[in-house]
Image 1 (tube, rainbow, N blue to C red):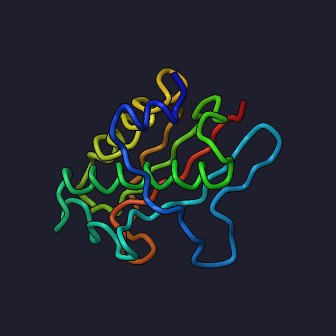
Image 2 (cartoon, helix red, strand yellow; image 1 turned 60 degrees about the vertical axis):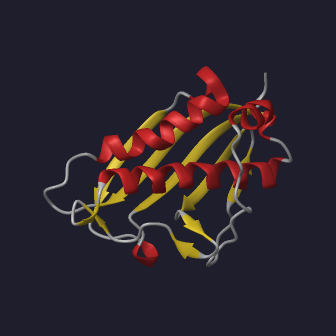
Image 3 (cartoon, helix red, strand yellow; image 1 turned 90 degrees about the horizontal axis):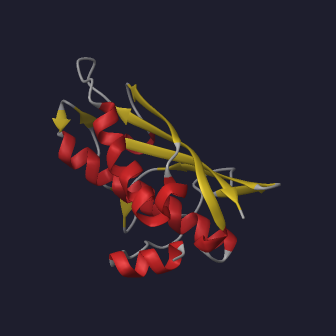
Length: 152
């Protein structure tokens, strides 16, 4: 079963493909790799759960934002590649979490996105990952995600 079948089986609805907010492209394909630009989780143009995790945004809301960011990554890839079945595997996922200085659960936030990628791609969705706390993110987002995928 391919990724497109998995999305249908899981009942996932991908959001509209993201549009760049500055001088970059959502996805850059180079050789057998695709690089997905940072995704700020949003719905209808509004940042999903803005703020600082551990100081106003709880872990569950940040996980919801991370999952939405992963869906946006999938949407960007589908737009660029024509089908997610062209993805041979997820190589790297970077998850940036706007964090209170005392917050240390960045990996728990990132797991929501990682788990979604494994649900869609199976073992090919397992990836190297960075889960990093930062003081702030663009547009006041609580989470931003970027990915590198290998192409079939």
